[in-house]
Amino acid sequence: MTTTPGTSTPRTISHWAGGKPFEGSSDRWGEVTDPATGSVTGRVALASRADADEVIAAARGAAHEWGRTSLARRVQIVFAFRELLNARRDELAALITAEHGKVHSDALGEVARGQDVVEFACGIAHLLKGSRTVNAATGVDVHSSREPLGVVGIISPFNFPAMVPMWFFPVAIAAGNTVVLKPSEKDPSAANWMAELWQEAGLPDGVFNVLHGDKEAVDAVLDSPDVRSISFVGSTPIARYVYERAASHGKRVQALGGAKNHMVVLPDADLDLAADAAVNAGYGSAGERCMAISVLVAVGDIADDLVARVAERTRTLVIGAGAVGACPAGEPDMGPLVTRAHRDRVASFVESGERAGAAVVVDGRDVDAQGDTDGFWLGPTLLDRVTPDMEVYTEEVFGPLLSVVRVDDYDAAIDLVNANPYGNGTAVFTNDGGAARRFESDVSVGMVGVNVPIPVPVAYYSFGGWKDSLYGDTHAHGVEGVHFFTRGKVVTSRWIDPANRPEGGLELGFPRNA
Image 1 (cartoon, helix red, strand yellow):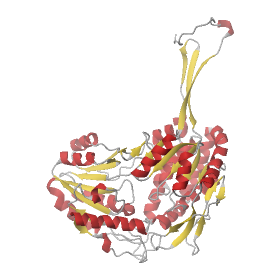
Image 2 (tube, helix red, strand yellow):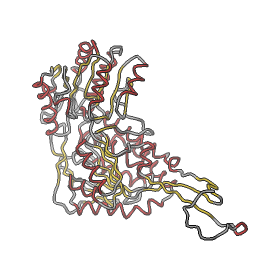
Image 3 (tube, helix red, strand yellow):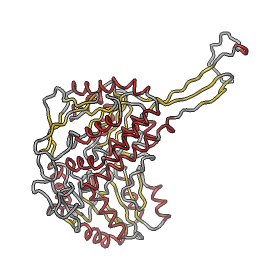
């Protein structure tokens, strides 16, 4: 594929429209960097409004025919995509590592979780079935169906350049829609790679399109009268903006926002398992996950012991370049952050917490990374005695920074979680089934883990949070995803039997069933 990384000359990453690369007319380009070295590896087209219109037009041109394509044929193509993705997942993982920075095994995990939704979409026929009622009224039958929307827009974030788009487009395509995907300009190559894979799987030109760019491209998709829905994942301020602007143009919207995920550890919990989970969920992918644990809530008198165990494990982590063979010590546990600016932003929260009185137990600013000195490195950081008024607690950090908040009892832990404006994910660690069951009911959060630190639902359940973590009322994938990408139609019919013709006549009253 043309997007394979590793060449010394920066690659040109164009849009993809109508089954081929499309450079567009804009003279604006963005730099794509390798976070492990700081070097520029590509330049990505930043669309003008005219470029966006061209890409959207390609999707619009394919929408009618694809929506009328048989369900059997659509599913066959989705299944072919699934098989190709399974065979070539290492290629996609390498692209993700090269532009995002997460280690190769983590990138493979991202691909696998995205593929779960592809596999779910292979069985969409069952979920697109309508219903039929015979003789709902005398001689009157009623049946329902679900039909595609047409052109749908997907705006995805940098942290999961493959998985998050795959939360949406397999279901959208299987349901008969055409897609305009606007990936992050920080790591855009995965989107083009998947576009080429769709073409190889037999998807007709124009069904899957990629629009690169920044706010200008986003606004074009939000405003276009041809785009009927928007699926978004990103920060809460942008999710709110996307929701309000798209909804004002009559689109249905699922805009998944930010998070501040708490992991509550009750006094009866297995502290070794809890410490393992906190490190895994707090520092995996350098904390650049919307489901990462960013707040560790220590309940009662276990705090000192728990913090010590987390710190001991944190200090063993190897930080380095995530590409296969790039780290002298073997594959590291954690890679760099996605950009230098983001690395500096996360480091500023360490400084802010320290100034506010938090104890820096493990300081990632002093990291000795196994990689190029110009990489965007920040090691795992552990802050203890964080309080809810501190900036490091109130803001979404989105990096390898784990904050420990100490509370006296279960009720205080619940109050802490529920007072937070975010409601994406949370977890409780306990060996008490009654306490766990109560926790499930008490927390105002969309996804809950019981002794599971990152409770990302399987593909046949839906992904999404509450409160400021979601704008719109529909979560991603699962049955909710199928309903989001289709609209219902109900047909009421009566066929006249000449041998039993009903009486005619005028009757202006509202029809009644009989």
